Image (cartoon, rainbow, N blue to C red; front, top):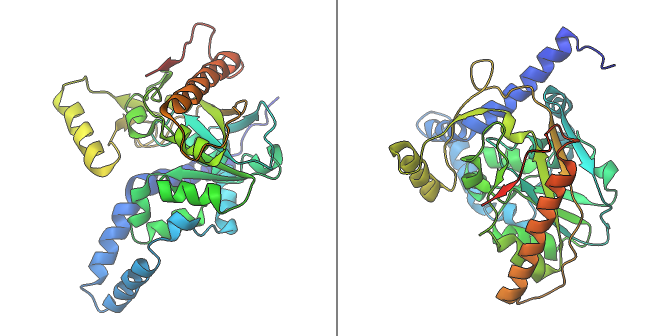
Length: 326
């Protein structure tokens, strides 16, 4: 029988998730405005010195970042995990003497499950997969935002850029697990409760990367991620959808119109189960052919579909649910 949460515990969980949501939505803009504002005050030397530092430190995110263990170990992430709760499930062994590219689906609105499982210690990745170092790769543009870049690098996040991923897979030895939310902004627009749609059919860059560095592919499915928010969806061809697509083309992300509980921005307290599937052995091919990329991309989609089918009932879905790959 699950122990009932105390009022204090409930409050701490809500506060930790509110911190995450506000960071996701407003931290980057707030940091940018603050640094510009300081340039017009008596504190302008602080802002000027930081911008000099920013230029000198520009390439650090692409060179493995600057992970701060105390940030990844914050107690607040345990409360964040318990809010939903988020659970990480292992279905196969991953050899610490190899490197891996983990494709995580679906993106959802904020990828709460992926962040909790792969960018904090709260879900026990290190205990489930001893010897592996896990890094979650996110939108590269976020690492150009002053101050925010320091915070997200401290949490162990990396830009999902070619230079960043190649550095991790080629210059950090073995035992690296790079997590990429493959569907990205396009998949977030398909996020809605009860929907199991992933955008991967025409996304092959992560497979090519795995071949170039001989890193095995691992499908990951985040059951419940799409149930955390209700999204206001715009039909194809509508003004709202055209605006979302335009911003996605310019900025690399698409603004979603969504609602949750508590001031409409808090995610629903819905369980999220991150299931790590079976690895797909990938050979080393420095210059892979299109046929090789297509072959292993097909194996990946098959592995993802099998993972969904095998785990859906135990993760709260009915037998009638199907995975749609677009």
